[in-house]
Image (cartoon, rainbow, N blue to C red):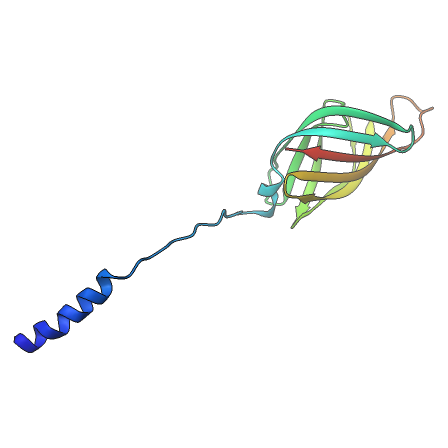
Length: 136
């Protein structure tokens, strides 16, 4: 019994002197999660050489790689986009009289999207080429 006790005491002292540190990193369960949120948008039109400012929300879509850009273009429209890693892709789509397509990237709290819009409400307006820079 005495021999067994001598083996247990050094092990108990060794375990008592150990310190365990757990570092928790934020886990992004899905690439699209990094895009979600409320943004303040600065949008520049190269076609008209003008800036427009508005707010936009990025919300989950039905599928794992989908998001919706609400109030996109400052026109109170919801545009479907697909996420792949840090990239976002707006497939060609017609939404409430606008034909939209584009792509972009997210870097931390800044989202940049280059896109173009054709306005089916006004046939005399040329295609609007824009760059959207959005901040959380």
